[in-house]
Length: 124
Image (cartoon, rainbow, N blue to C red):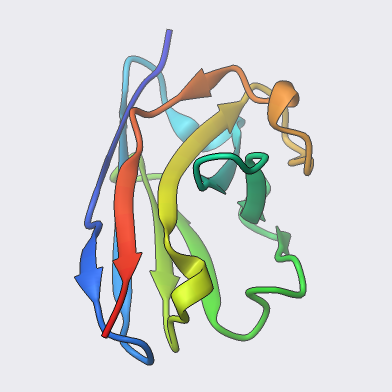
């Protein structure tokens, strides 16, 4: 069992930055691929960043590429999502998720463990 707890969400103006953290307990994340997803009410949950267990590979959809950066600190058992140049459309609840595999995927059903989510609101 892996317990994931996100933090770092909040209200930010367009163009601002936030860093989300996802702290894990129960098992080490060194053998897990990790994903960050977001979901707005009425919309599907979408992947915004993923990182392999070894940290050697990352993935971003075009909507956030160049603005978001995912990182994984295996020593601290924590995953981060640095979000820069935030836009109004980035507003959503952000979730981190763990997949018991070295390879991340884009499909949320492939992830077994989920955090409770943290709200990110981009507004002027």
